[in-house]
View (cartoon, rainbow, N blue to C red):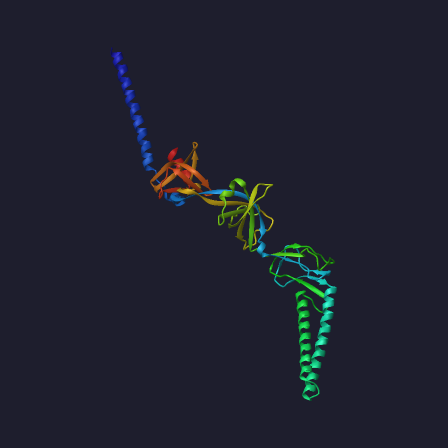
Length: 365
């Protein structure tokens, strides 16, 4: 009997000790949680951003290519036929308006120069005849009609001389039977179709140079038939290229070509953007992202604030250095650096966007 009492007492004592240990462990854990606070160093590394309600947006990804603005492209044609004596620019060169691009030795220019010399001689003769007519009229040896006829002849020769000078000026010609091909605008040489020694005809339909201003360029992108209804003028666009993978260029859709290519079943849209530093070159391939409103609004946070763990999404909600909550959220969509939150956050709450993973591990280990 005494042995049984002794066993029962020992069991009760062991149970009391175990309960005491469990209570102590719970108190220690609770004390740790209550005692958690960000140090000054950690607080200086923490960044927070408020939850903001924004319109829900979607993206459409397109493939396109960079082309020059057609309104800033000039094709230069030879105005006279002849032999190309000199070409002074190369493909890709930047030229100033009025700069000489090529020199053409031309028989046509030689003919106009000959006519110019003849017109100058005939004008001098007409002016001399007018002077004689005036003198004879003063001496009563001729009539006023003779003076008027001589004056009309001078005017006719002056008009012919002016015409020939303007023709030679248009041709960029000099007194040596040479015509100069000059740049009509400042820009870059995109095409060059002549070389020294080339024989040109004045009726040639091919341009010898193509010059374009590239401070503003276009991106032509293809839209699949299923996405045509989502594309509108003035949609903001982001453009990326292989040459500058870490850089985003911004433009706007300024034209929708309402014609469907029957082969590819795509429609083109045109995006206009500034190219002040001339980084974008005609012919480059481009990746285009069009952003548009999807309807409705949702709370948003920076996408970098999200923590993925145990197949769920969490954020660290910051109240102060001693009060930080781990909050599960339902993400509707992530768009670039913005995440739309379906549930779990309220507008105005602050989420940690830097060093949040360290804090998450400290609170949830």
